[in-house]
Length: 352
Image (cartoon, rainbow, N blue to C red; front, side, top):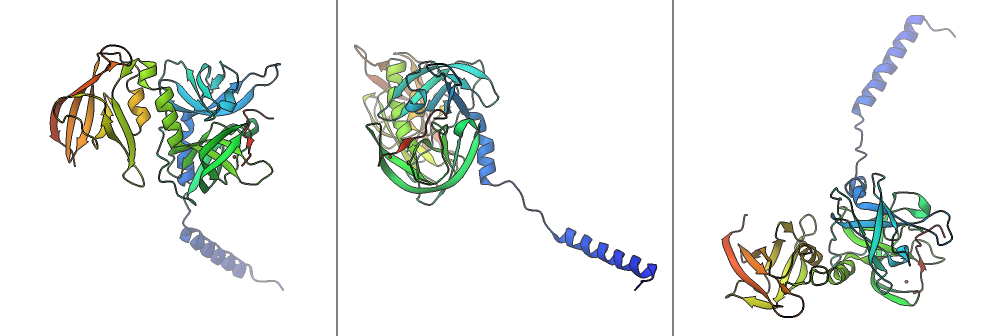
């Protein structure tokens, strides 16, 4: 049957109007989500660790995280192995010579220093004290050499203990995010892009069972092995702890547990919140240490302290870490109101 041309034209026009209406009614969804934002904001803090093979051939690949803009990178001990001078590739492709400044199998942690004229984008260590089983996590690394691979999952369990080559690693975060050789040393992020752990191992012959060293452990290790006492030879006398004050945002504080030094009156008290050391804001105990790396005994630094709704600026005179004059001293400078693995297979540093 043949229809009049005017009928066909009218029907086509009607279909066009209906389809146009449907298109106008459809609201597109945003393709941005917390994962894409976390990846975007942290990518410049994630590096590639390249370790030469003893007998030549292609470099072994691992991952690292910049924790200090001056060039300090955290990775796994098993990533660097016996290598003292790994190569470090930044997110922009810049290749730098690295120097291993410490590596300890008992923590499976290592730190690599690089020297560059620009300040690197650091990723601060966040508290892992309030992690929740079931919360979303993001792992980033270079599995099998595939650079900057992102995988997601949840925290499956907390405070796991595994045996890695005879060393017992405790307090680990168990996750179900996909991790493979080359992910080692890379960041484990929460949904807000905060660094809550360093990926380290996967369970052999299992699916979706992997482990990360908690940020609290990393913070504690860095505070000790890269402390101001060791790197600058100074004694600040501050014993600090971290305190969670919120679920998101500016959620952690550094609280003074005690002060081992000379204080005039009550210028420093247990329970004081340390907000900054000199010009550096602090959110963990490692921040306190690295703020003093370039000081020397006898120097005076300002502590910005909060106590009972007031802010204090306390002048801290640093002592020597050993020998005479080893006691730190503190005095108030100003006062003003506060503005309102069971056995696990290592996630290797190479395509092994």
